[in-house]
Length: 305
Image 1 (cartoon, one colour):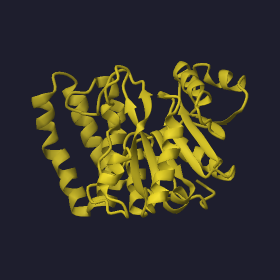
Image 2: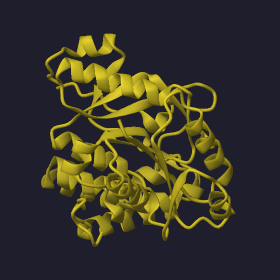
Image 3: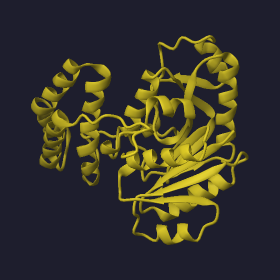
Image 4: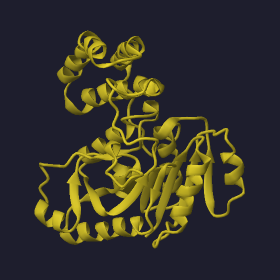
């Protein structure tokens, strides 16, 4: 089985070094390690150039979405059966990949079409990382029951993040690639929703564990988040509306857009203690952007993207 690990990095050399070290120490080492460098300026390029056995792609900064898309194209051309995707702040435990591969075998023996699996992500103190909690697939109907899967340490899910995400060749060939224009935040949610819509179940593998080394354990919340993250909301809020438009309903999209224009400013004033006007402005800007933002997902045959 050819497994290509894909690591997207930008200006986090120390974390990247730790991530690559963890990949090389896996009990089941990936067949190939692809590093997509989004034009780092902190010495990452020089460090990568000195390494042996890594496939390096250097490109203009296209965020996580563009990095993963480029990595999958490279892995596909190399003959990858599965791609194992992660950010540079993802540190897999030594048996993380082996446990994911065991889950592949379990679902195949059950006869159910799982197309992707994700590890359990922990923060630095060992608590579940709030950013990486997937939604359970309450409507999952497989040849084996949800209880059977739970007993085998697999929770059927409908979405996941790009933090130790393993995707089959069949799934990414059918569902396409991440939408590069989304850049960051909710790009992984859209992509795994699309995998699910294409007919592939997803699974959280409880005994496959990674550390997600973010500065704090948080889930995005514009009512309490630090002002330093405000630029990410320009993308994230827009991308969430894109998901509503394409995966829920147009009426849901319009209702939520109206809510953001009319209600969110009052909620921000009531709940935030600082940076109220900048957050109101980014809500309005992202919502206005979303009204015109509807790029089509790229596919492997789309050579120009």
